[in-house]
Length: 147
Image 1: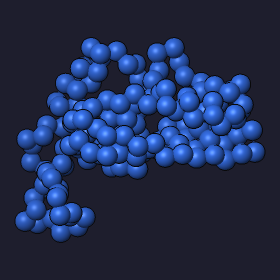
Image 2: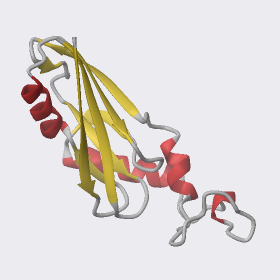
Image 3: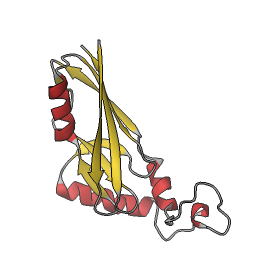
């Protein structure tokens, strides 16, 4: 049994930037030479979660419209009230309550099977990181357990 890990870095470009990680993760699986096991893909951020879905441009636009309706940026969020909030406030803190609320609907990690050296994805499934906040550096950790 082997355990192999890697951290992938990404620069997001905008809010609702859908970054397809599939090729980079597939490359890591191939390099690992693990034939059978699992891969865990984990975000290290509270406002940049992961999901599996189809990478079709019009569908990605639909996702953006759906997310904007689900948690509107201009709604009133307690998290955005810096006159009352005293916990986890950074020097360059932004009003991102909507981003955290949206993240509730996504997983922070994905676990996929590796069989015969390949991740088991459906025909159209792709691995995405989605930026729910402002553009910034993001990290995704991947770990393979197998033989």
